[in-house]
Amino acid sequence: MQKKSAKKKYVLVGTGSRASMYVNALMRDYTDVGELSAFCDSNQARMDYWNSVVTEEYKKKALPTFMADEFERMINKIKPDKVIVTTIDRTHHTYICKAMELGCDVITEKPLTVDAEKCQQIIDTSKRTGKNVTVTFNYRYSPRNTKIKEVINSGVLGDLTSIHFEWLLSTVHGADYFRRWHRNKNNSGGLMVHKATHHFDLVNWWTGSFPETVFAMGDLFFYGKENAEKRGVREFYYRAKGSKIAAKDPFALHVTAKDKRLKGLYFDKAEKEDHYFRDQSVFGDGISIEDNMGVMVRYRNKAIMTYSLNAHSPWEGYRVCFNGTKGRLEFNVVETPYVSGGYADFNQPGMHELDCDKETMVPEIIFQPHWGKPQVIDYEKAAGGHGGGDKRLLDHLFRGAKVDPLGHAAGCEDGAKSILIGIAANKSMKTGLPVEIKTLVNF
Image (cartoon, rainbow, N blue to C red):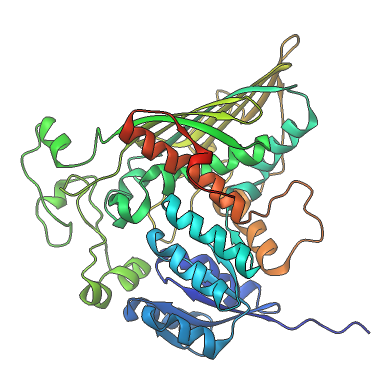
């Protein structure tokens, strides 16, 4: 009789809203293979909130909590197999590298980190320690994104010559980045790193090629006080809570008693600890990230990508067009906007059908050969966040995969390649010059 393998032990550092996927998974669906053993954060109130979820919702014993400066003590005491990192982006490298140095493998939220120096530190530490870093690119696992990979791999497009990728963040989802800590580029690397890492990773994965040259332009055109003043706005507020001006602003985040997660993680006791205000005005001062960006990328296989990101669109979703020597592949996705920390998830499959006439809807995946009729390509539909990708990602993280022919699992190099496009784009926007990826880090 085969001996049942022991559970792996996990600790989680960073207990903001991104922690929810891992807390819920290890407390519910993966208890047979994994055990969440401790929380670590710079804010005790947030850890207390998640322990209330653990005890009240999952009827389990509260987990030990450790402050951020006790990270090493936590590792030495708990002795986890893996560390899950969901902290603010600019601190990812600190916990990733320290965890590897203390003998642990790492699972980290995207982006891997925010600049080239920190990226190099992670690469070097992984090589030196022999420990693994897994980056949770859940979009790879979505069945519709997987189908795109399969179509390209089939050779039906021939040699890939160019890709156009347009990503639209709605005024619900997009605005949220300008309320939170992400609005400070030092914290997040801007949307070119924090958000677009998802998109750049998809193109890297779909094409199986390496980005070499990046040129970009971008600016803050819509959010921020100066832009609001140009449009005639004369009344401003710092945060929505308690503001009569905010009550009239459709961009304001209004938190009510039913928003238990938002209140528990960011308001009440939490904000008194660290003075971080989750409901800042998107038309305030101090925003240093862009809301409109355009990027060109030359790949090693000579294909060219043109990419655009808009953070104040009337609708949410993305369009990708692949041109090849045998035809064109078009990919259209409409998503549901999401406010981080809320209960409703986004990126559900087929959500656009709720508001559209099915007879006039544009099919999601279309292949048009140079000679012949367009072909609508179907794919497996799946429920859940990120187009059904979250569940598949979690299965892979906690149960493993016997085979992974399409290479869904993303490691340290994948995480680095995705952010390096964004890091190069930020440098290009600053200098007005193209940037060679090879000048940023050594793999």
